[in-house]
Length: 207
Image (cartoon, rainbow, N blue to C red; front, side):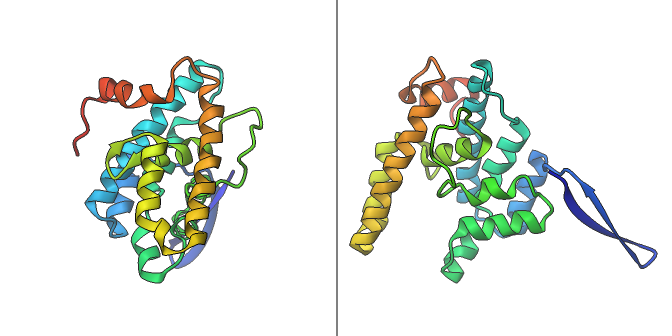
């Protein structure tokens, strides 16, 4: 998809259409520019590793995704986390707006769907948004965990706010389990292998 980028030259505005997927260093720079704390940047880096690892495994299985898009979506998924806390608004939606304002039109819907996907059904392909959404649910702070561990944490931290909050978390867990099933039905590894394999690939995580 083309994005629009406006530049000024000799006091004349020009709007140029082109595809923009930011490189890794630009994503990290954007996170710092938007005041994202180090611990959330660390979380995002681990999410990126999980998402890229699964993207590579899926590519070998015939399910091709764009690694640059996966990387950018994973790194930028929490770019509006602090703003969301300040304003009491969904940080996924705010993050999608930020990505679009930056001109990262292809990345915007991935950021916007990292909390909740538009489509959970198995439509024949695992796309970049599903990968980032799932990878985010496998990382608690900066540690790779199981879905059960991740959702136990979420339920303990947020589920007591109301019965509705607990129900939403439970529903999200069921939906994410469905995504996990879709992903690993295409692979020869199991969900429980991810932590070990990524540690073997990258070494133990350090910022």
